[in-house]
Image 1 (cartoon, rainbow, N blue to C red):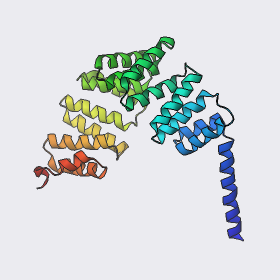
Image 2 (cartoon, helix red, strand yellow):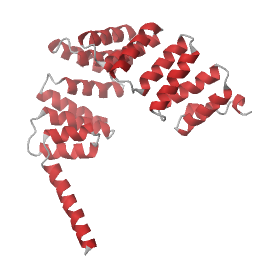
Image 3 (cartoon, rainbow, N blue to C red):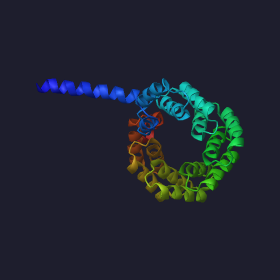
Image 4 (cartoon, helix red, strand yellow):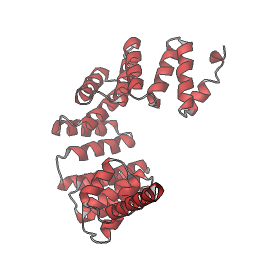
Length: 271
């Protein structure tokens, strides 16, 4: 009897789940995207579109789902469909530009973003996206100018401030980079990548103790954050602590770093 009740419960759950997908609202779809439940989000979008193909938010969410499922072609198509329904839909514009950049078409992303910014001026997200596109084509000056413009428009825009700091590190404008990264941490103190960038900035400032502290903090937040693990291994090697360097290169190798595996073949780590 108990087994019968169990199987009935499972059947009810499955039917309920199917019903939720077919009857999903836009809010349900957005919630699935927030949870990064990409298969469910995709199914919900497709079910919704059988009834209504005029909602740009659903197409944008479908783009997010395809991107999460590593299908960039359909992601691009979905974002562009959202834009065709609402030419002022900034999140869809940014999504489309990101796909183009990651696919090696940064110049096209720049062209599209510039065109769209003629109709949507002074939008922080668009300036940040344009900054990323210019950075992809190694136009550092335009990248920095757009990140600065994004921050001017929205001083609390963490992503743009972080992107600006990365450019400043590349340019060895280290004091400003550190200041911007510390401001990012004021908004969110648990960002492993930001502590890693701080470690790099301090390393370039020849402050090894501070650099070590920042790399360790990054790893304490996310022990699998590979850039910080590799940077810490290099940091110890550069400063003559081969025992600790080997320890973190081994950790990086376990995380899948081919660079770390090659470094461990070096004779200095064979002792």
